[in-house]
Length: 407
Length: 173
Image 1: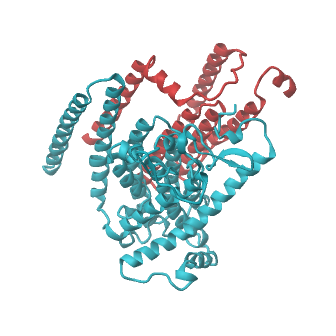
Image 2: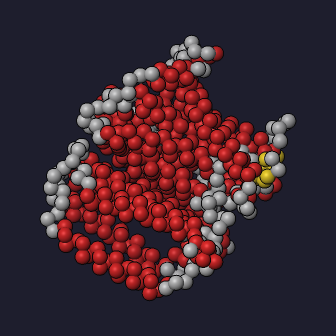
Image 3: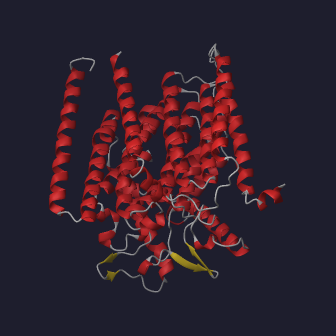
């Protein structure tokens, strides 16, 4: 049964103390770094947005205001914890945890470092034991990420419902519709990655991306990457998809009635989700801890061993995405609700499905030794026909709706 | 007894885990039908479905377990709750949730239980499952896309037809 829960070589064989301690250490490190990283993320976001808007941003607490989040957190701890009269008590208390815990759990399957060079499958040596810089590597790793992100919907939905007032409920209904809609596009663009990598485990996915041309962002032809980033932003309810908590319309959305520690949990979960989603994107499309390599040339960071270098690369790529998310927020205006749904259902899902089919056709053609150009030409022609039919159907249904006909 | 079971190459830990999870699932399932709050009923149902996923993991079927969470917990129940919120989002107990013929469900449930237990006991008797690793995803996909391709396509087609039918029905009124 060694392979059931993890194929980390650490966990093979008899149960001994040292591996147990290493696993406990990993859990602790992920937990602490996750929390501290979230604190840093809040500061980073406020500071960068301030820079983009010609303001100074937090600058009082600590050097460069870096302790501002800590101060805010302490303040929230000491606030009164309100529980609305009409709230459903148990669910109201449960909801923040349902939002917070999945955000943390995703970290368990992300490779946060390790040596992936020369077919070394991310193994490093710790205290004389070969292991991975990742908590668990289940064979269904990336599906676990999807499952957890679909559980996170419950936190927001139940928070809105159990508050017993209308703004949170409206926010929750919007959030659910949005997250369910974009999960489809997210899954379909993910399927393109799985097709190229041929593995569901995160180690396998990272392992195949050993040079820039093999990074999935290039190998799958950029389109799934763009769709994944858009859909992930929508899943995170971050601007420009933040209709869930649109301040101008819904006061605060699903968390209007929350205060004190419970609000802090939602706040933390939101920012932690941003970091985890960036981590997922890095793992799926940018090779995770793999160094930048073009052809035979590999960007080598001097003075650090290959194992630590993986972590540095991962963090660099992660920071890039965190910056991009802040940039989105500072730049893009919020979508209207109908635009949101149109984008999700009529643009992202058909394109990602079509692209997936195209990749599958090319893959089949390669395996069967067919002429590449012929396969590509036939598939593109087929997809164009499908697109024309679909847009025709949309046009007809749009015209019917305008004429007031019921279908 | 445990030593005897272990000697018969029965996996004791898994059986104990199965019992505990099954007891939790039965309790949650009873709560689904007895609670007087629709949203709470849906949440208890989420627990039951999550318990099924846990049982799959015990049976070393990881892929099925994750699919169970993705499909039932992540999609079906979210849509349930979404529907409840759009139509009747009141907090607190409601009256008149029980169907008047609820007692008729009991014999049906008993017969179903008997049928399923008989089928399983008849098929497996007291064979113990071999202690093998988890079923890999690639083996499942090979099975679905080779020997079971036609049933798989047929089921997909039925689901598609049902979805389109639902849309047509919903749009007519």
